[in-house]
Length: 586
Image (cartoon, rainbow, N blue to C red; front, side, top):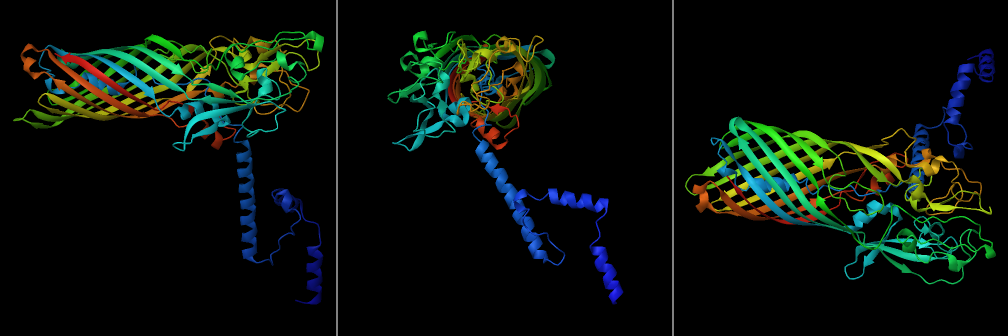
Protein backbone atom coordinates (compact mmCIF):
# COMPACT_ATOMS: atom_id res chain seq x y z
CA UNK A 1 0.00 0.00 0.00
CA UNK A 2 1.48 3.41 -1.02
CA UNK A 3 1.48 6.57 1.06
CA UNK A 4 -1.57 8.18 -0.63
CA UNK A 5 -3.67 5.03 -0.06
CA UNK A 6 -2.76 5.01 3.62
CA UNK A 7 -3.69 8.70 3.89
CA UNK A 8 -7.13 8.14 2.32
CA UNK A 9 -7.76 5.17 4.63
CA UNK A 10 -6.90 7.16 7.77
CA UNK A 11 -9.12 10.04 6.60
CA UNK A 12 -12.03 7.63 6.05
CA UNK A 13 -11.55 6.17 9.53
CA UNK A 14 -12.02 9.62 11.13
CA UNK A 15 -15.13 10.54 9.12
CA UNK A 16 -18.52 10.69 10.95
CA UNK A 17 -20.55 7.49 10.66
CA UNK A 18 -23.72 7.38 8.61
CA UNK A 19 -27.22 7.56 10.17
CA UNK A 20 -27.63 3.79 10.03
CA UNK A 21 -24.27 3.29 11.64
CA UNK A 22 -25.23 5.78 14.39
CA UNK A 23 -28.44 3.87 15.17
CA UNK A 24 -26.58 0.58 15.33
CA UNK A 25 -23.96 2.09 17.59
CA UNK A 26 -26.63 3.62 19.84
CA UNK A 27 -28.44 0.26 20.15
CA UNK A 28 -25.19 -1.43 21.08
CA UNK A 29 -24.41 1.31 23.61
CA UNK A 30 -27.88 1.16 25.21
CA UNK A 31 -27.71 -2.61 25.52
CA UNK A 32 -24.65 -2.40 27.76
CA UNK A 33 -25.44 -2.30 31.50
CA UNK A 34 -24.64 1.01 33.19
CA UNK A 35 -21.99 -0.54 35.41
CA UNK A 36 -20.02 -1.56 32.30
CA UNK A 37 -19.93 1.90 30.70
CA UNK A 38 -16.38 2.48 31.90
CA UNK A 39 -15.12 -0.61 30.13
CA UNK A 40 -13.23 0.31 26.92
CA UNK A 41 -14.93 -0.56 23.66
CA UNK A 42 -13.87 -3.83 22.17
CA UNK A 43 -11.94 -3.71 18.90
CA UNK A 44 -11.42 -6.29 16.28
CA UNK A 45 -7.93 -6.80 17.53
CA UNK A 46 -9.14 -8.16 20.90
CA UNK A 47 -8.86 -11.93 21.24
CA UNK A 48 -12.04 -13.96 20.69
CA UNK A 49 -11.61 -15.62 24.08
CA UNK A 50 -11.76 -12.19 25.79
CA UNK A 51 -15.02 -11.37 23.97
CA UNK A 52 -16.64 -14.64 25.08
CA UNK A 53 -15.43 -14.11 28.62
CA UNK A 54 -17.06 -10.67 28.80
CA UNK A 55 -20.30 -11.97 27.31
CA UNK A 56 -20.42 -14.70 29.94
CA UNK A 57 -19.74 -12.17 32.71
CA UNK A 58 -22.57 -9.97 31.44
CA UNK A 59 -25.00 -12.91 31.47
CA UNK A 60 -23.89 -13.94 34.94
CA UNK A 61 -24.38 -10.38 36.21
CA UNK A 62 -27.89 -10.21 34.75
CA UNK A 63 -28.85 -13.58 36.24
CA UNK A 64 -27.46 -12.57 39.62
CA UNK A 65 -29.47 -9.34 39.51
CA UNK A 66 -32.67 -11.21 38.70
CA UNK A 67 -31.98 -13.70 41.49
CA UNK A 68 -31.46 -10.92 44.02
CA UNK A 69 -34.69 -9.24 42.94
CA UNK A 70 -36.59 -12.53 43.23
CA UNK A 71 -35.22 -13.23 46.68
CA UNK A 72 -35.95 -9.72 47.92
CA UNK A 73 -39.54 -9.91 46.64
CA UNK A 74 -40.23 -13.48 47.78
CA UNK A 75 -42.05 -12.25 50.88
CA UNK A 76 -44.13 -9.71 48.98
CA UNK A 77 -45.56 -11.69 46.07
CA UNK A 78 -46.59 -14.96 47.71
CA UNK A 79 -50.33 -15.41 47.48
CA UNK A 80 -52.44 -16.92 50.23
CA UNK A 81 -55.84 -18.58 50.22
CA UNK A 82 -58.69 -16.44 51.61
CA UNK A 83 -60.55 -19.68 52.26
CA UNK A 84 -59.75 -23.37 51.99
CA UNK A 85 -60.95 -25.25 48.89
CA UNK A 86 -61.52 -28.84 49.96
CA UNK A 87 -63.12 -31.89 48.44
CA UNK A 88 -66.78 -32.43 49.21
CA UNK A 89 -67.54 -35.50 51.38
CA UNK A 90 -69.86 -36.62 48.60
CA UNK A 91 -67.20 -36.32 45.88
CA UNK A 92 -65.44 -39.60 46.65
CA UNK A 93 -65.51 -41.97 43.69
CA UNK A 94 -63.07 -44.33 45.44
CA UNK A 95 -65.36 -44.93 48.41
CA UNK A 96 -68.42 -45.08 46.17
CA UNK A 97 -66.91 -47.70 43.90
CA UNK A 98 -65.64 -49.79 46.82
CA UNK A 99 -69.05 -49.69 48.50
CA UNK A 100 -71.00 -50.51 45.34
CA UNK A 101 -68.78 -53.25 43.98
CA UNK A 102 -67.59 -55.52 46.77
CA UNK A 103 -69.00 -58.42 44.75
CA UNK A 104 -69.28 -57.69 41.04
CA UNK A 105 -69.39 -61.48 40.49
CA UNK A 106 -73.05 -61.52 41.53
CA UNK A 107 -74.26 -58.97 38.97
CA UNK A 108 -76.49 -60.79 36.50
CA UNK A 109 -77.39 -58.72 33.41
CA UNK A 110 -79.81 -61.47 32.35
CA UNK A 111 -82.15 -60.43 35.17
CA UNK A 112 -84.74 -57.67 34.57
CA UNK A 113 -83.01 -55.66 37.30
CA UNK A 114 -80.03 -56.06 39.58
CA UNK A 115 -77.85 -53.83 41.70
CA UNK A 116 -76.48 -52.91 45.10
CA UNK A 117 -77.35 -50.78 48.11
CA UNK A 118 -74.97 -49.54 50.80
CA UNK A 119 -74.59 -47.37 53.88
CA UNK A 120 -71.02 -46.28 54.65
CA UNK A 121 -70.16 -44.39 57.85
CA UNK A 122 -66.67 -42.86 57.76
CA UNK A 123 -64.25 -40.72 59.74
CA UNK A 124 -61.82 -38.35 58.00
CA UNK A 125 -58.98 -36.38 59.58
CA UNK A 126 -56.51 -34.00 57.96
CA UNK A 127 -52.76 -34.50 58.05
CA UNK A 128 -49.84 -32.06 57.89
CA UNK A 129 -51.44 -29.11 59.68
CA UNK A 130 -48.43 -26.99 58.80
CA UNK A 131 -49.32 -27.11 55.10
CA UNK A 132 -52.83 -25.87 55.89
CA UNK A 133 -51.36 -22.98 57.87
CA UNK A 134 -48.97 -22.25 55.00
CA UNK A 135 -51.94 -22.08 52.64
CA UNK A 136 -53.67 -19.48 54.79
CA UNK A 137 -50.70 -17.33 55.82
CA UNK A 138 -47.95 -17.99 53.25
CA UNK A 139 -44.41 -16.82 53.91
CA UNK A 140 -45.31 -14.79 56.99
CA UNK A 141 -45.04 -17.92 59.14
CA UNK A 142 -42.11 -19.03 61.24
CA UNK A 143 -41.44 -22.70 61.91
CA UNK A 144 -41.85 -23.82 65.50
CA UNK A 145 -39.69 -26.93 65.98
CA UNK A 146 -40.69 -29.72 68.33
CA UNK A 147 -37.54 -30.32 70.39
CA UNK A 148 -38.44 -33.96 71.00
CA UNK A 149 -38.73 -34.90 67.32
CA UNK A 150 -36.86 -31.95 65.71
CA UNK A 151 -39.75 -31.67 63.26
CA UNK A 152 -41.96 -28.62 62.61
CA UNK A 153 -44.95 -29.03 64.91
CA UNK A 154 -46.65 -25.66 64.53
CA UNK A 155 -46.50 -22.52 62.47
CA UNK A 156 -46.05 -19.15 64.18
CA UNK A 157 -46.85 -15.55 63.28
CA UNK A 158 -44.85 -12.91 65.12
CA UNK A 159 -46.82 -9.75 65.85
CA UNK A 160 -44.59 -6.80 66.73
CA UNK A 161 -45.18 -3.08 67.06
CA UNK A 162 -43.41 -0.57 64.87
CA UNK A 163 -41.33 0.61 67.85
CA UNK A 164 -40.28 -2.92 68.82
CA UNK A 165 -36.54 -3.27 68.35
CA UNK A 166 -36.22 -7.04 68.80
CA UNK A 167 -38.01 -8.28 65.68
CA UNK A 168 -37.38 -11.84 64.53
CA UNK A 169 -37.62 -10.94 60.84
CA UNK A 170 -39.00 -7.56 59.72
CA UNK A 171 -39.98 -9.12 56.39
CA UNK A 172 -42.32 -11.58 58.15
CA UNK A 173 -43.53 -9.86 61.30
CA UNK A 174 -47.04 -8.46 61.34
CA UNK A 175 -47.08 -4.81 62.41
CA UNK A 176 -49.08 -4.67 65.64
CA UNK A 177 -50.09 -1.05 65.01
CA UNK A 178 -52.51 -2.27 62.31
CA UNK A 179 -54.41 -4.37 64.86
CA UNK A 180 -55.30 -1.59 67.33
CA UNK A 181 -52.27 -2.66 69.38
CA UNK A 182 -49.50 -0.58 70.94
CA UNK A 183 -46.40 0.15 68.88
CA UNK A 184 -44.26 -1.77 71.39
CA UNK A 185 -46.57 -4.79 71.56
CA UNK A 186 -45.15 -8.23 70.83
CA UNK A 187 -46.74 -11.69 70.74
CA UNK A 188 -46.55 -15.05 69.02
CA UNK A 189 -49.56 -16.67 67.32
CA UNK A 190 -49.36 -20.46 67.10
CA UNK A 191 -51.46 -22.40 64.57
CA UNK A 192 -52.25 -26.11 64.36
CA UNK A 193 -55.19 -26.43 61.92
CA UNK A 194 -57.27 -29.59 61.98
CA UNK A 195 -60.37 -30.71 60.05
CA UNK A 196 -62.42 -33.72 61.17
CA UNK A 197 -65.46 -35.03 59.33
CA UNK A 198 -67.91 -37.82 60.12
CA UNK A 199 -70.20 -38.80 57.27
CA UNK A 200 -72.82 -41.42 56.46
CA UNK A 201 -72.93 -42.16 52.75
CA UNK A 202 -76.14 -43.67 51.40
CA UNK A 203 -76.05 -44.95 47.85
CA UNK A 204 -77.52 -47.41 45.41
CA UNK A 205 -76.91 -48.80 41.94
CA UNK A 206 -79.73 -50.33 39.88
CA UNK A 207 -79.28 -52.01 36.49
CA UNK A 208 -82.17 -52.53 34.07
CA UNK A 209 -82.93 -54.30 30.80
CA UNK A 210 -80.86 -53.43 27.74
CA UNK A 211 -77.96 -52.17 29.84
CA UNK A 212 -79.55 -49.06 31.34
CA UNK A 213 -78.63 -48.16 34.91
CA UNK A 214 -78.96 -45.47 37.57
CA UNK A 215 -76.83 -44.49 40.56
CA UNK A 216 -77.72 -42.35 43.56
CA UNK A 217 -75.61 -41.03 46.43
CA UNK A 218 -76.24 -38.57 49.29
CA UNK A 219 -73.86 -38.18 52.28
CA UNK A 220 -75.07 -36.88 55.63
CA UNK A 221 -72.03 -35.34 57.32
CA UNK A 222 -70.83 -33.22 60.20
CA UNK A 223 -67.51 -31.40 59.95
CA UNK A 224 -65.42 -29.67 62.62
CA UNK A 225 -62.79 -27.08 61.67
CA UNK A 226 -60.29 -25.88 64.26
CA UNK A 227 -57.51 -23.48 63.24
CA UNK A 228 -55.73 -24.28 66.51
CA UNK A 229 -54.84 -20.67 67.31
CA UNK A 230 -53.04 -19.79 70.52
CA UNK A 231 -51.38 -16.49 71.46
CA UNK A 232 -48.43 -15.97 73.79
CA UNK A 233 -47.82 -12.31 74.66
CA UNK A 234 -44.32 -11.07 75.45
CA UNK A 235 -44.46 -8.55 78.34
CA UNK A 236 -43.36 -5.02 77.44
CA UNK A 237 -43.26 -1.67 79.22
CA UNK A 238 -44.06 1.81 78.00
CA UNK A 239 -45.44 2.48 74.57
CA UNK A 240 -46.98 5.59 73.10
CA UNK A 241 -50.02 4.22 71.37
CA UNK A 242 -50.70 3.99 67.68
CA UNK A 243 -49.48 6.61 65.22
CA UNK A 244 -50.75 9.52 67.33
CA UNK A 245 -54.37 8.45 66.85
CA UNK A 246 -54.56 7.12 70.40
CA UNK A 247 -52.46 8.80 73.05
CA UNK A 248 -53.15 6.42 75.93
CA UNK A 249 -51.61 2.97 75.73
CA UNK A 250 -54.13 1.59 78.23
CA UNK A 251 -57.01 2.34 75.86
CA UNK A 252 -55.67 0.07 73.11
CA UNK A 253 -56.49 -3.58 72.39
CA UNK A 254 -54.51 -5.91 74.64
CA UNK A 255 -54.02 -8.96 72.35
CA UNK A 256 -54.15 -9.81 68.67
CA UNK A 257 -56.95 -12.37 69.18
CA UNK A 258 -59.01 -9.62 70.83
CA UNK A 259 -58.71 -7.77 67.52
CA UNK A 260 -59.04 -10.75 65.14
CA UNK A 261 -61.85 -12.57 66.93
CA UNK A 262 -63.55 -10.76 69.80
CA UNK A 263 -64.40 -7.46 68.09
CA UNK A 264 -62.61 -5.32 70.67
CA UNK A 265 -61.58 -1.81 69.61
CA UNK A 266 -59.74 1.03 71.38
CA UNK A 267 -61.54 3.64 73.42
CA UNK A 268 -60.88 7.31 72.68
CA UNK A 269 -59.97 9.95 75.23
CA UNK A 270 -60.52 13.48 73.96
CA UNK A 271 -58.84 14.88 77.06
CA UNK A 272 -55.58 13.36 75.86
CA UNK A 273 -56.03 14.68 72.35
CA UNK A 274 -57.48 11.59 70.68
CA UNK A 275 -59.48 12.47 67.56
CA UNK A 276 -63.19 11.88 67.54
CA UNK A 277 -64.64 9.15 65.35
CA UNK A 278 -65.43 5.45 65.35
CA UNK A 279 -63.06 2.49 65.49
CA UNK A 280 -64.79 -0.35 63.68
CA UNK A 281 -64.01 -3.95 64.71
CA UNK A 282 -62.97 -6.72 62.35
CA UNK A 283 -66.25 -8.15 61.15
CA UNK A 284 -65.19 -10.78 58.58
CA UNK A 285 -62.32 -13.17 57.90
CA UNK A 286 -61.96 -13.60 61.65
CA UNK A 287 -59.23 -15.69 63.28
CA UNK A 288 -60.66 -17.35 66.39
CA UNK A 289 -59.13 -19.92 68.78
CA UNK A 290 -62.19 -22.16 68.94
CA UNK A 291 -63.57 -24.71 66.44
CA UNK A 292 -66.50 -24.20 64.09
CA UNK A 293 -68.95 -26.95 63.08
CA UNK A 294 -71.36 -27.58 60.24
CA UNK A 295 -73.85 -30.45 59.80
CA UNK A 296 -76.08 -31.40 56.89
CA UNK A 297 -76.34 -33.24 53.58
CA UNK A 298 -73.26 -32.31 51.58
CA UNK A 299 -74.74 -32.80 48.09
CA UNK A 300 -76.91 -35.19 46.10
CA UNK A 301 -75.41 -37.12 43.16
CA UNK A 302 -77.55 -38.74 40.46
CA UNK A 303 -76.22 -40.72 37.46
CA UNK A 304 -78.14 -42.19 34.54
CA UNK A 305 -76.32 -44.30 31.99
CA UNK A 306 -76.15 -47.15 29.53
CA UNK A 307 -73.82 -50.14 29.48
CA UNK A 308 -73.24 -50.81 25.79
CA UNK A 309 -71.08 -53.79 26.79
CA UNK A 310 -72.93 -55.79 29.42
CA UNK A 311 -72.31 -59.42 30.31
CA UNK A 312 -71.06 -61.44 33.27
CA UNK A 313 -67.38 -60.93 32.45
CA UNK A 314 -67.31 -57.47 30.92
CA UNK A 315 -69.16 -54.22 31.46
CA UNK A 316 -68.55 -50.85 29.84
CA UNK A 317 -70.89 -47.90 29.92
CA UNK A 318 -71.34 -44.15 29.80
CA UNK A 319 -73.51 -41.99 31.98
CA UNK A 320 -74.74 -38.45 32.57
CA UNK A 321 -74.26 -36.92 35.99
CA UNK A 322 -76.01 -34.15 37.93
CA UNK A 323 -75.11 -32.85 41.38
CA UNK A 324 -77.45 -30.75 43.50
CA UNK A 325 -75.78 -28.57 46.17
CA UNK A 326 -77.32 -29.09 49.59
CA UNK A 327 -74.37 -28.00 51.75
CA UNK A 328 -73.36 -24.51 52.83
CA UNK A 329 -71.79 -21.67 50.87
CA UNK A 330 -68.72 -19.72 52.03
CA UNK A 331 -69.83 -16.63 53.93
CA UNK A 332 -66.36 -15.24 54.64
CA UNK A 333 -67.09 -14.45 58.28
CA UNK A 334 -64.33 -16.77 59.50
CA UNK A 335 -60.94 -17.33 57.91
CA UNK A 336 -61.07 -21.06 58.71
CA UNK A 337 -64.72 -21.49 57.79
CA UNK A 338 -66.23 -25.01 57.84
CA UNK A 339 -67.32 -26.03 54.36
CA UNK A 340 -69.75 -28.87 53.79
CA UNK A 341 -70.25 -29.70 50.13
CA UNK A 342 -68.84 -28.13 46.98
CA UNK A 343 -69.48 -24.49 47.87
CA UNK A 344 -73.02 -24.22 46.52
CA UNK A 345 -72.32 -25.19 42.88
CA UNK A 346 -74.75 -27.09 40.69
CA UNK A 347 -72.82 -29.63 38.63
CA UNK A 348 -73.44 -31.36 35.32
CA UNK A 349 -71.29 -33.71 33.33
CA UNK A 350 -70.76 -37.35 32.57
CA UNK A 351 -68.46 -40.28 32.83
CA UNK A 352 -67.25 -43.68 31.75
CA UNK A 353 -67.53 -46.78 33.94
CA UNK A 354 -66.94 -50.49 33.67
CA UNK A 355 -65.30 -53.64 34.95
CA UNK A 356 -63.37 -56.53 33.48
CA UNK A 357 -63.03 -60.05 34.87
CA UNK A 358 -59.64 -61.20 33.60
CA UNK A 359 -59.09 -64.23 35.82
CA UNK A 360 -61.41 -66.83 37.34
CA UNK A 361 -61.09 -70.21 39.06
CA UNK A 362 -64.14 -72.34 38.40
CA UNK A 363 -63.36 -74.85 41.13
CA UNK A 364 -62.58 -72.58 44.07
CA UNK A 365 -64.90 -69.66 43.30
CA UNK A 366 -62.01 -67.23 43.01
CA UNK A 367 -61.67 -64.34 40.58
CA UNK A 368 -59.88 -61.04 39.95
CA UNK A 369 -61.74 -58.06 38.50
CA UNK A 370 -60.60 -54.65 37.34
CA UNK A 371 -63.08 -51.82 37.94
CA UNK A 372 -62.85 -48.16 36.96
CA UNK A 373 -64.93 -45.02 36.93
CA UNK A 374 -64.01 -41.66 35.39
CA UNK A 375 -66.31 -38.67 35.77
CA UNK A 376 -66.00 -35.05 34.68
CA UNK A 377 -68.37 -32.25 35.67
CA UNK A 378 -68.65 -28.50 35.29
CA UNK A 379 -69.28 -26.40 38.40
CA UNK A 380 -71.80 -23.71 37.52
CA UNK A 381 -71.94 -20.24 39.04
CA UNK A 382 -72.47 -20.12 42.78
CA UNK A 383 -72.99 -17.05 44.93
CA UNK A 384 -70.58 -16.69 47.82
CA UNK A 385 -69.17 -13.98 50.09
CA UNK A 386 -65.47 -13.37 50.67
CA UNK A 387 -63.04 -10.75 51.93
CA UNK A 388 -60.11 -9.82 49.70
CA UNK A 389 -56.64 -8.34 50.01
CA UNK A 390 -55.39 -5.23 48.22
CA UNK A 391 -53.16 -5.41 45.17
CA UNK A 392 -50.51 -2.91 46.24
CA UNK A 393 -50.43 -3.86 49.91
CA UNK A 394 -50.17 -7.57 49.11
CA UNK A 395 -51.24 -10.78 50.86
CA UNK A 396 -53.04 -10.53 54.21
CA UNK A 397 -53.51 -6.78 53.82
CA UNK A 398 -57.15 -7.37 54.71
CA UNK A 399 -56.00 -7.38 58.36
CA UNK A 400 -54.52 -3.87 58.08
CA UNK A 401 -56.33 -0.69 59.07
CA UNK A 402 -57.65 2.10 56.87
CA UNK A 403 -58.52 5.66 57.88
CA UNK A 404 -60.97 8.11 56.32
CA UNK A 405 -59.00 11.29 57.05
CA UNK A 406 -55.32 12.29 57.12
CA UNK A 407 -53.38 11.77 60.31
CA UNK A 408 -53.69 14.73 62.64
CA UNK A 409 -57.28 15.44 61.67
CA UNK A 410 -59.70 16.14 64.55
CA UNK A 411 -62.08 13.41 63.32
CA UNK A 412 -60.77 10.04 62.07
CA UNK A 413 -62.68 6.80 61.56
CA UNK A 414 -60.73 3.54 61.37
CA UNK A 415 -61.70 0.12 60.04
CA UNK A 416 -59.97 -3.12 59.01
CA UNK A 417 -59.50 -3.50 55.25
CA UNK A 418 -61.47 -6.78 55.28
CA UNK A 419 -64.62 -4.84 56.19
CA UNK A 420 -64.17 -2.75 53.04
CA UNK A 421 -63.30 -5.55 50.62
CA UNK A 422 -65.98 -7.97 51.82
CA UNK A 423 -68.03 -8.72 48.71
CA UNK A 424 -70.82 -10.76 47.19
CA UNK A 425 -69.20 -12.74 44.40
CA UNK A 426 -70.04 -15.29 41.75
CA UNK A 427 -67.63 -18.17 41.21
CA UNK A 428 -67.43 -21.21 38.97
CA UNK A 429 -64.93 -23.88 37.95
CA UNK A 430 -64.61 -25.18 34.42
CA UNK A 431 -63.76 -28.80 35.17
CA UNK A 432 -63.84 -31.21 38.08
CA UNK A 433 -62.41 -34.68 37.43
CA UNK A 434 -62.70 -37.72 39.68
CA UNK A 435 -61.00 -40.85 38.29
CA UNK A 436 -60.68 -44.13 40.16
CA UNK A 437 -59.34 -47.58 39.28
CA UNK A 438 -59.26 -50.64 41.53
CA UNK A 439 -58.52 -54.34 41.52
CA UNK A 440 -61.09 -56.60 43.14
CA UNK A 441 -60.05 -60.05 44.39
CA UNK A 442 -62.80 -62.44 45.49
CA UNK A 443 -62.32 -65.81 47.17
CA UNK A 444 -65.48 -67.48 48.41
CA UNK A 445 -66.86 -65.21 51.14
CA UNK A 446 -63.92 -62.82 51.20
CA UNK A 447 -63.22 -59.85 48.89
CA UNK A 448 -60.36 -57.36 48.78
CA UNK A 449 -60.21 -54.07 46.86
CA UNK A 450 -57.10 -51.97 46.31
CA UNK A 451 -56.95 -48.92 44.09
CA UNK A 452 -55.93 -45.38 43.18
CA UNK A 453 -57.96 -42.20 42.79
CA UNK A 454 -57.13 -38.86 41.14
CA UNK A 455 -59.23 -35.78 41.85
CA UNK A 456 -58.89 -32.25 40.55
CA UNK A 457 -61.00 -29.12 40.32
CA UNK A 458 -59.67 -26.43 38.02
CA UNK A 459 -58.91 -22.86 39.00
CA UNK A 460 -62.06 -20.96 39.83
CA UNK A 461 -63.28 -17.83 38.08
CA UNK A 462 -64.43 -15.01 40.35
CA UNK A 463 -66.76 -12.25 39.22
CA UNK A 464 -69.75 -10.28 40.48
CA UNK A 465 -73.31 -11.40 40.01
CA UNK A 466 -74.59 -7.82 39.67
CA UNK A 467 -73.17 -5.00 37.50
CA UNK A 468 -70.45 -3.56 39.68
CA UNK A 469 -66.85 -2.38 39.79
CA UNK A 470 -65.41 -4.65 40.91
CA UNK A 471 -67.89 -6.06 43.44
CA UNK A 472 -71.29 -4.94 44.66
CA UNK A 473 -70.57 -5.16 48.37
CA UNK A 474 -67.36 -3.11 48.29
CA UNK A 475 -69.47 0.01 48.73
CA UNK A 476 -67.12 1.04 51.54
CA UNK A 477 -64.49 1.81 48.91
CA UNK A 478 -66.83 3.42 46.41
CA UNK A 479 -67.33 6.56 48.49
CA UNK A 480 -63.64 7.37 47.96
CA UNK A 481 -62.88 8.40 51.56
CA UNK A 482 -60.78 5.49 52.85
CA UNK A 483 -57.00 5.49 52.61
CA UNK A 484 -53.98 3.57 53.85
CA UNK A 485 -51.57 4.99 56.40
CA UNK A 486 -48.75 5.61 53.94
CA UNK A 487 -48.70 4.74 50.26
CA UNK A 488 -46.20 1.86 50.42
CA UNK A 489 -47.42 0.13 53.56
CA UNK A 490 -47.87 -3.64 53.89
CA UNK A 491 -48.77 -5.97 56.74
CA UNK A 492 -45.01 -6.10 57.46
CA UNK A 493 -44.10 -2.41 57.37
CA UNK A 494 -45.55 1.03 57.98
CA UNK A 495 -45.91 3.48 55.15
CA UNK A 496 -43.20 6.10 54.88
CA UNK A 497 -45.22 8.62 52.88
CA UNK A 498 -47.74 10.58 54.91
CA UNK A 499 -49.62 11.62 51.75
CA UNK A 500 -51.86 8.61 51.28
CA UNK A 501 -53.77 7.61 48.15
CA UNK A 502 -57.50 7.03 48.42
CA UNK A 503 -58.58 3.42 48.00
CA UNK A 504 -60.91 2.46 45.15
CA UNK A 505 -62.67 -0.79 44.21
CA UNK A 506 -60.02 -1.31 41.54
CA UNK A 507 -57.45 -1.82 44.32
CA UNK A 508 -59.11 -5.06 45.44
CA UNK A 509 -57.10 -8.14 44.49
CA UNK A 510 -59.76 -10.46 43.06
CA UNK A 511 -57.47 -12.61 40.92
CA UNK A 512 -55.07 -13.25 43.79
CA UNK A 513 -57.84 -14.95 45.76
CA UNK A 514 -58.55 -17.75 43.29
CA UNK A 515 -58.05 -21.32 44.49
CA UNK A 516 -58.10 -24.83 43.01
CA UNK A 517 -57.76 -28.37 44.32
CA UNK A 518 -55.94 -31.57 43.44
CA UNK A 519 -55.17 -34.82 45.24
CA UNK A 520 -53.95 -38.38 44.78
CA UNK A 521 -55.54 -41.11 46.85
CA UNK A 522 -54.63 -44.71 47.65
CA UNK A 523 -57.26 -46.92 49.23
CA UNK A 524 -58.14 -50.48 50.17
CA UNK A 525 -61.15 -52.38 51.50
CA UNK A 526 -61.80 -55.83 52.95
CA UNK A 527 -65.32 -57.27 52.93
CA UNK A 528 -67.20 -60.41 53.92
CA UNK A 529 -70.20 -61.72 51.98
CA UNK A 530 -72.84 -64.16 53.26
CA UNK A 531 -72.87 -66.61 50.35
CA UNK A 532 -75.30 -68.97 52.07
CA UNK A 533 -78.06 -66.45 51.28
CA UNK A 534 -77.52 -66.52 47.52
CA UNK A 535 -80.77 -68.40 47.01
CA UNK A 536 -82.73 -65.40 48.29
CA UNK A 537 -81.15 -63.07 45.67
CA UNK A 538 -80.39 -60.64 48.50
CA UNK A 539 -76.75 -61.13 49.44
CA UNK A 540 -75.55 -58.97 52.36
CA UNK A 541 -71.97 -57.84 52.82
CA UNK A 542 -69.98 -56.01 55.48
CA UNK A 543 -66.58 -54.40 54.99
CA UNK A 544 -63.95 -52.06 56.35
CA UNK A 545 -61.79 -49.72 54.31
CA UNK A 546 -59.16 -47.01 54.59
CA UNK A 547 -57.63 -44.35 52.35
CA UNK A 548 -54.66 -42.00 52.34
CA UNK A 549 -55.00 -38.81 50.32
CA UNK A 550 -52.05 -36.70 49.19
CA UNK A 551 -53.18 -33.11 48.81
CA UNK A 552 -51.47 -29.94 47.69
CA UNK A 553 -48.19 -28.55 48.92
CA UNK A 554 -48.02 -25.14 50.54
CA UNK A 555 -49.87 -22.68 48.36
CA UNK A 556 -47.26 -19.95 48.43
CA UNK A 557 -44.49 -21.84 46.64
CA UNK A 558 -45.68 -21.30 43.07
CA UNK A 559 -46.25 -17.60 43.67
CA UNK A 560 -42.82 -17.10 45.16
CA UNK A 561 -41.24 -18.60 42.07
CA UNK A 562 -43.30 -16.48 39.67
CA UNK A 563 -43.45 -13.04 41.24
CA UNK A 564 -45.73 -10.65 39.44
CA UNK A 565 -47.75 -13.43 37.82
CA UNK A 566 -51.19 -14.40 39.15
CA UNK A 567 -51.31 -18.01 40.21
CA UNK A 568 -54.08 -20.30 41.38
CA UNK A 569 -53.25 -22.09 44.61
CA UNK A 570 -53.92 -25.78 45.24
CA UNK A 571 -55.01 -25.87 48.85
CA UNK A 572 -56.46 -29.36 49.15
CA UNK A 573 -55.20 -30.67 52.52
CA UNK A 574 -53.64 -34.07 53.10
CA UNK A 575 -55.96 -36.44 54.95
CA UNK A 576 -56.70 -40.02 55.89
CA UNK A 577 -60.00 -41.79 56.33
CA UNK A 578 -61.40 -45.04 57.64
CA UNK A 579 -64.87 -46.43 57.00
CA UNK A 580 -67.27 -49.30 57.51
CA UNK A 581 -69.62 -50.32 54.75
CA UNK A 582 -72.69 -52.47 54.95
CA UNK A 583 -75.24 -53.34 52.32
CA UNK A 584 -76.44 -55.98 49.94
CA UNK A 585 -76.47 -56.92 46.28
CA UNK A 586 -79.63 -58.11 44.59
